[in-house]
Image (cartoon, rainbow, N blue to C red; front, side, top):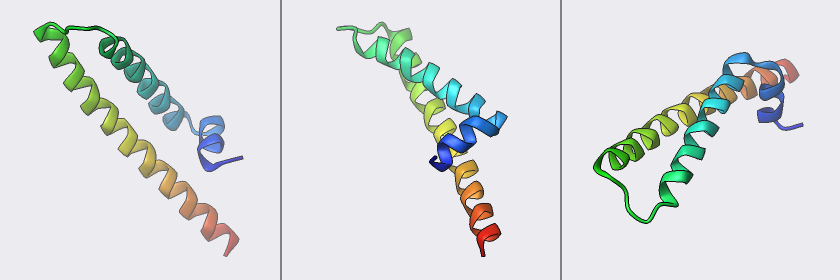
Length: 75
């Protein structure tokens, strides 16, 4: 089981962030499927990309701390 899988199974905040990230990704996919975007949709696309990146950074931080704690327990 990967650290990400372990966190998804046991860490509520990580699971919440992953769900939110997936929701943003799905909305972005639906926007990119459109041939033309309105001005509002273009702004939404930019906003979603920024939010998605922020969530990814938070998830990576949690995963990094998790890996460090696992390494400390083994050592």
